Amino acid sequence: MQNNFITFYFLLITHYKMSVQPILSTTQDHLPIHDILENLVILKNGSAAMVIETSAVNFGLLSQEEQDAIIYAYAALLNSLNFPVQILIRSERKDISAYLGLLAAAAKKQMSPTKRSWIESYRQFVADTVQRRNVLDKKFYIILPFSSLELGSVKSLGLAVANQNRLPAPLTEIVKKAQVSLGPKRDHVVKQLERIGLTARQLTNKELLSLLYRTYNPGYAAPEIDTVNLTAPLVEPIIKTNEQETMNKKQ
Image 1 (cartoon, one colour):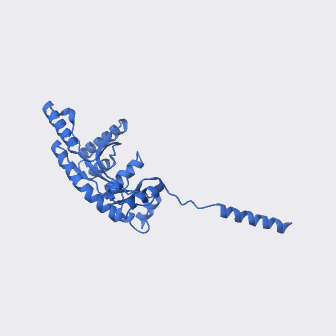
Image 2 (cartoon, rainbow, N blue to C red):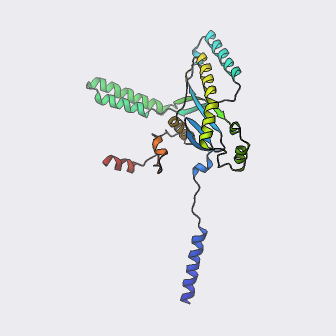
Image 3 (cartoon, rainbow, N blue to C red):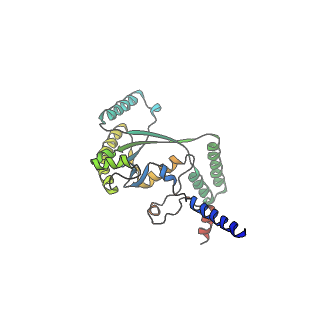
């Protein structure tokens, strides 16, 4: 009887181990992004995108003549486009932690007690103002897309349709053709924006990582991202716990 029980228990454990499969999927499987290379966002279907950040102008404070000039220049920009663009406006809560830290450091260095008190009062005023009011920081982007259809390969198109998780062409080829296609478009858009009085520039790899992090983690400031670490064989976690930071400081 005891032997039968042991045999049954052994078979039950064996069946349980065989039925439990390790979880291999990650969050990245649900994201359309394959990689970020050469200041481009490469998507899993072989498409790519270039992101241009542009400044803004306070339209309401301009005179009527200046407003008309900007409207005509903006209309000329739209009429000059023979390719698709996407205009993205992101409103994020203003992060002033770095500015408050700068004021705190300046107060410590101040020798005069009176001036130190002024800086601390101003720092407290800024902190209270941001806490009481929802201060937003607006960012303006123009996104230039590169379609996988521009790769010019029927075989690549077939692979893209058949397998969404596999690039339809080698990554280096996608990056090269995307740069050739999007480079002149970027220069044209930047030139047209200068006619409106705006400054524009292409986001770098690090800035693209920060933008995507804030997009998928709303309400959180992007941590310091080490782009070299992300390409290492063993990738360290981006966000470290307080225990890890304390241990690193002790070392």
